[in-house]
Amino acid sequence: MDTTAPVPDRPAAGRVPTRFLPRSLQVLRHRDFALVQVGNSVSQIGTWMQYVALGWGIRQLTAWPFAIALSLVAQFGPSLLLSPYAGSLADRYDRRTIVIVGNVLMVFPPVAIGVLVSLGVQTIPSILALAAVGGIAQAMTQPAMVAIVPRIVPPDEIAQAIAGQSVLGNLTRVVGPSFGALAINAWGLDSAFYLNAVSFLAVVLAWAFVRPPVDVRDGEHESFWSRIRAGLAYSRRHPQVLQLLGYAAVMSLVVYHAALLPVIATDVLHSGASGYGLLQSATGIGAIIGALFAGEITTDARRRVALIGGVLATAAAYVIVALSHSLAVSMAGLGVYGLAFFMAGAVSQSALLTATDDAYRGRVMGLYSTMVVGGVPIAALTGGALGSLLGVSEAVGTAAIVMSAYGGWFVLSGAYRTVAIDEILVEELEPEGAT
Image 1 (cartoon, rainbow, N blue to C red):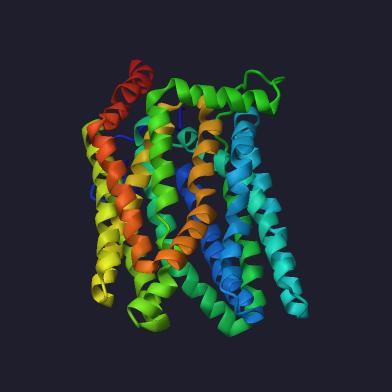
Image 2 (cartoon, rainbow, N blue to C red):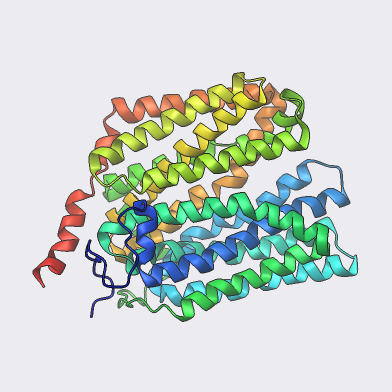
């Protein structure tokens, strides 16, 4: 029996009907995908707990604000350098094995940080070094984790699967920091690191019960550099892949308000830590709604509108934040940002996965991770530099201008027309219908 075949609209006897749920949640009816998402969600909660603990731990050691920015560089910087290599790895070896091994390796750095904190011998260099080791393991695992999604859901539900991942991921973004703060208050700073270490085992346990089909890989004797070059050539040859990668690059590198948000909350809005928390919550709520919307976008016409609207609405949200001196108005602007940015991100990533041949998915997602994950430290440093040079509101306004210009080019050049995956989906589903 083909476990990847689409489930009929009418539920089997005894099953809870899912047709009234958003499409991004309906996809959880597939057992393998649901197991993986439960494991990923537990792990992401742990990651957000460590995110809070890292910032708090570094702040206890120094009042130098740039040190916290360096923690972002340590965690996400490796993706900027290693993702193309990791993508080549994902196209050469079994992706499930890579995910399991990578998550096992990610257990050790937070345990080591926790031990240093427990002993009271932690230093900024040691914390940053261990965070970088964890970042390396994550960078080597991320392309395989994304590229394997089409192997555990039907082809016509890839978009819903990516949207579902975004919904759950943003839910963890909302609850994870709160859990981290509670753990630190109840059991101490070291507990957040230990809990993060345990959370990676949830991913390992989930994949122990999921065994997707394994494709035979061609070119086993090619060097990694040859495979990376082949992935780059593939991306250049396919206009849709190239445009979607470019879209991801612009949206990731120009969205740098997160590095400025603490200053906006204190110096512009005069709302302190409570205001900062409300701004973060507004972003998370908007992101969840945006991801739910993304799951309902099922045609090329809607995908194009979503991508155009996503970049222009994100620019408009940045204008609101740049001009606002009101906490409520800024929260509304960040809510719009969360909705637009994460909707567009889910749509572009799912289209990229669908448009890419499976033999190249790892390498293309490696390039995608380079821009999206590796772009985090670049965006943070860019935002910090522009904020220091121009002022935080002016820096956010500059990003709005850049995104507006790109959105205008994306429309006027006709680049949006390259997004066309309906025919690909029909071709992939025809063999199933024939059988």
